[in-house]
Length: 174
Image 1 (cartoon, rainbow, N blue to C red):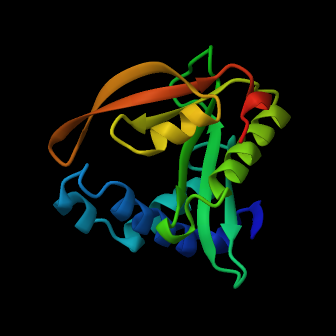
Image 2: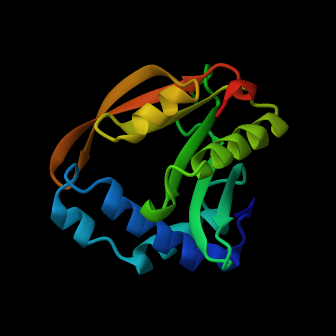
């Protein structure tokens, strides 16, 4: 496995992982129609905005390639989106194809994000995750503490999101 910073050329593969991982991760949580209506093209358009700087210059993305050079996971982070002074760093997204989960890839991606934030002189971070997402156990296992909660709307339904925070990014441990 190879972990590296993403490039513009990776956008189609990141979009594919994003859609495919959403469909497996959120099956039974989000409405089926919402998951079925996700398209690679729409996700590519969203990722183009990220890579073209439309969402800010302080955003970064890492990818993980398998032995064949195929992107099988990614993590995206940067400055926290709502101006939180306690947790100024944020993991925006981390997705790994289901066949590659539970192999330590999530840990590698989390540590890369934490390290990059530290290079930006940001030493605390958070991640928002659906309360029903099995990944909550992962965040707890690597030292995340539940710090916030809010309701969001997706596909016409209300869901609870929780934020896991780290007060010292050097302690994101796997």
